[in-house]
Image (cartoon, rainbow, N blue to C red; front, side, top):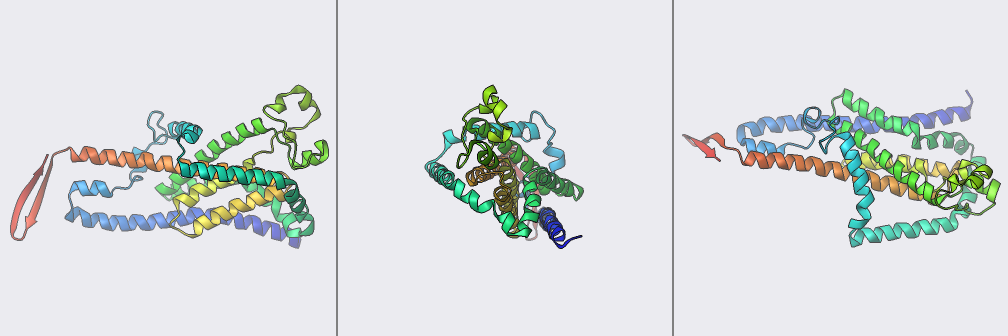
Length: 341
């Protein structure tokens, strides 16, 4: 095996190990929490009432029994929550607060600026594979992690978590797939409405700097479709960047208390975005817009999940407070009964 092939294979193994490391960190950390929770539970059993036990219950307790992902009616079921996420994302702009509008405006401004400099950035990116042999060997491998290998890695992390009966890991993997699906939908919608040329098509067909924007549903125009390939209509935004950042955001948010996981997650996602430039598949503005979509979809999915499960625990607590409770209490040498209703 040549040296360059060894380098390429080592980079591929490094990325795969990153995803395995993310899953393993989550499993190990959660198992440590479960041990601590078990010790705390034995202590509170002898010191506190049943009401306090319910307050300490985490949203993921009894996940496999009470939070069925196969339910078609419960908001905690996979399909209902997926449709709810689509709906929340669609109407999100109508509920923006001033701060969120400022962030959106800044993101729009950066995208416009990148569109202006897309051609210059592409001139720099497209020659990197020629200048650096290690880029030429690793870029094609890295870029695939915004496609099927990245999706399979997220699913594999979920299966690994399920094998170790790690509830948080399973939930994280399920949320990652929802973030990928929802971001993929919005990417497809924007591709249809923008109809932008990819760099290769722009250089070989239209000769337009920054790629020509054909507009909504241009690929269904028979006159254009006959003369132009599909790459002339599907550049903006980048689907690979959206997929990579949707996965990274879910894992980084879920395991934000483990400093290495957000760093690794966003680093891998950023490398995927850069590889779309070095592979001459997208403009810089495509990658930026795709990364934003993946990030915001990942944040929304995690936020909705946490809100749904917190409401479930609050509901259980409210019901428990309305029930009669009989407790044996001890004060010094005196023993009595405490009755609540």
